Image (cartoon, rainbow, N blue to C red):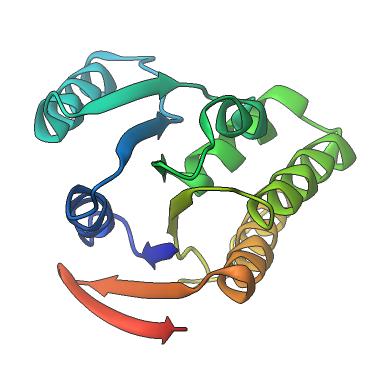
Length: 171
C-alpha cells in the first residue's frame, strides 16, 4: 500500500490508523534522523502517537535490509517515509547518483516480494514549482518516478489532502 500526499497532509495518521486496524504484528520503520531539537521532538511525538503496540526500527539508509529482517506473513511494516529515506541517500552518496538509484531499485525489487504487508508513506513532491538547481530537480524526478513504480506494484494507493484520504487504487 502506498500513502502519498503533501507535507503535513495527514499521510502518517492515515497509514497508522490502517495498520492499527489489522490483526498483525506491527513494525514501524523510521527513516528520520534527529539532527536538531525540532526533529528530536517530532520523533518523540510520533513514538508517543504509535503507542506500545509497535516495534520500531530506526534505519535512515539500509531500508531494504531492515524490511528483510522483519518481513513475514504475520507482520505489517509501516515505512515512514520513502522521500525522507531518499533524501538520506542523496546526502550520503552526494554526487554518486548511481549508488542512490541502485538502492532505490533494490528496494523496489524487494517490495514486489514481501511476504507480509508493507505500507509506504511518501511525499508527493512534484506538484510545486520546478526547482532551481540540478540536485533538487533530480531528487524531485527520482521521488516521482519511484512513487509511480510503488503505486504500480501496490494493491492500494491513497492520496491524502487536508487529512482526508482519497483512494486512487484498490485491487
